[in-house]
Figure 1 (tube, rainbow, N blue to C red):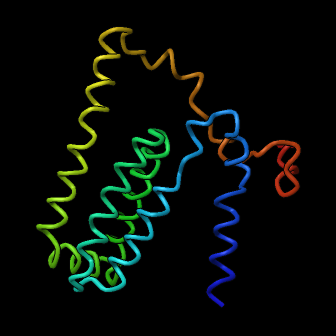
Figure 2: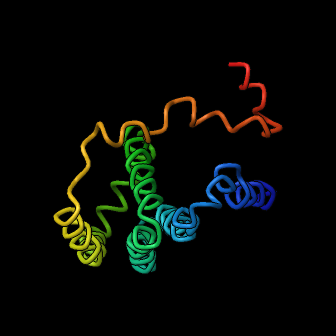
Length: 169
């Protein structure tokens, strides 16, 4: 019975409207490293004390780094999602205990792989800094018109069979 929810989740991940709307933005298509990072977290938190988790720690951090390299935007959203997940873990006592258990048993491995992943991003950061020196940094007023409004996160267009009623809003 667990296959059905997994299949539905995989279908929505691959064919959701938000994914299809990005077809003209190929830089926002490669998100497979996010799935790998989340899988590593599930494996890590399912048996927090297992020594085999060392490989999942590596997979998690390398996947996060690879996602940033593959698609900066989606890597950024992965980071925000992980931050929200961590806040949720801190708010619920059983999740908080599990998270601290993982940190307690694997602190050195988490620190080592976290630093290695951070160092792997240095060339990207260097490139962005060099580009900003050449072309300058845009001010908030220049990018504000391109920031999605609240409605754009929910309205999927008139062609959506599930949300077309929102046209009247």
